Every structure is written in C-alpha cells, then in structure tokens.
Image 1 (spheres, rainbow, N blue to C red):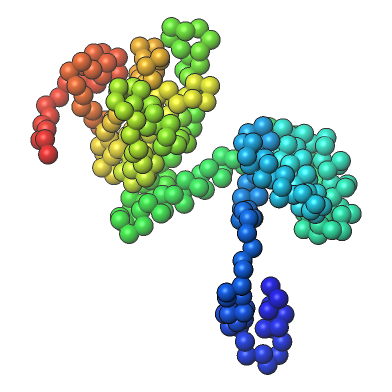
Image 2 (cartoon, rainbow, N blue to C red):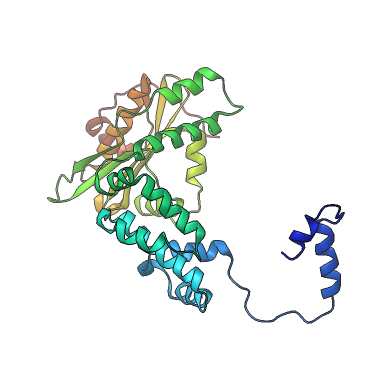
Length: 314
C-alpha cells in the first residue's frame, strides 16, 4: 500500500482510513477497470495445493492465467507441489534434491528460510519421511479434547467434562471381513470422519427416502457419545449413532446399512462396535427401540433383551 510508509513517518497524523477515503474521492466518477475479477490469494493457494489430477479444468486454466509471466509465484508453486508429492509419497531420497535449489533462491526468502530450517533438523525430517510412525494419533487426541471443551463450555460441570476426556475409546479402527463375499473387508471406525452429503445419501439409500440436507455433524457433536462409521474402499456403507445421558445410559439410533451390503453382518458389526465403546465409556445400559420387522435383528443377531418400556408420540 502506498500510504503505508507515509503513515509511519514521525509526526504524520494520517491513518490508513484517511488515506483510503482520500484515494476513493479521487477515483470517484472515473472509469473503473473492466474484465474478470482477479482470484484471491486463498483461491490460488487452493489450486496449487490440489493434486493436478483432481483439479477441475476451469480451475487449472485460472491457475495457469494467474501464474503467467510471474516467475516468483511460478517457482513457489513448483516447489510447493514437489514438496507435497515428496511428503505424501514418503520419498525421503528426494529431500536433498528439493532443498538444494531452494536454499540459494534469493527471490523467495520465505522458501529459503524454510529449506534452511529443514537442514538444521535433517535427521528428524528424514525419519518423518521414511519411518512408518508419526504423531497423527497424538494430534487426533488433541483435536478431540479441544472439540469436547468447545462442546461442554457453559453446559455442564467439570466432572462431566473430565469423564468425556478421560474415558477415551479403547480402539480407533478395526476390520470385519464380509460374511458372504470373500475378499470384501469392511472397516469400522469409532467417531470416524464423515461429511453430511455422504451420510444423507446413505440414509436415503438404506431407509428408502429422498436425500435430505440434515446437518449430521452439528447434531452428533452436540448430543452423541459417539458414532460408528463402516467403510468399504473409502465409501460409507454403514452408520450408527450412539447418544447418551452423560451417565449410565446410552441409546442406539438410526442403524443404517447401504442396500448392497444389507444381510451381510454389517449392521451387527456396527451395533457390536457401538456397545463396545459405550461400555468403555462406563455406560451400564444400551437402549434401542425399533419397528417390528427389525425384532430378529436386534434380539437374535445383536443380543438385546426384551424389557418393559413406554413411548409418547409428540
């Protein structure tokens, strides 16, 4: 900004706002530049960090136009993409070839400083790119604790917050082979990541109704002890929600399985995982209600017992 150095001069009474207003008065009434609006820095960053094969053709053309005749951003984009490929593919052998051209680059001081810091801690960087161990589990637990703190703020006392933080699930992810399809492996994850669109599509497929636009993530984060996601090859094929009262009682809701995986034990595995995690959270009772045609599933397959209960339609 032109006014930046001027406003910092000793004794200058003007501010950025005054200079902006002055410039806007000068430009008022003058013809404005025409043509498409230039992309934002965030949009260009997104295009650079997206894998070229996953970048839509329109965004690829926009990125090409944004980098045209701009050697510094082009060099930065090339270094960024090469480092991303090196990190995702764990190619530690490419690290020297990446840092060598980056270190003497005087036109990109931020990149040069980053390369210098990598060289100072080279052993740790090489270990991160070559060894199978990482700190992802630790970061997951940190993010989980932060989420719990945000959920509980202003709603309950310290004892309930302490219980939700300390009673962590005893497993994160496990697999269950398909009962009738050999070679099919379903992966189950407690409090697994999902997006609303995929879960709404699964509900529509499993329950036979139009696709809704429910904000499942907001609902589950507010009311649930957890949930179990079932995935086959990365696709969401099963889901069950576990709500609770903050104490001894947990409740199974909306057990759903994709139609092409129904009758193969996926629903039973979902409920088994949900019961396992509710027990790990020190819940004493797991409740469920269901329609009559699901009685064999919950009683015979999942092991629920008959009990006296009541219901009021609201």
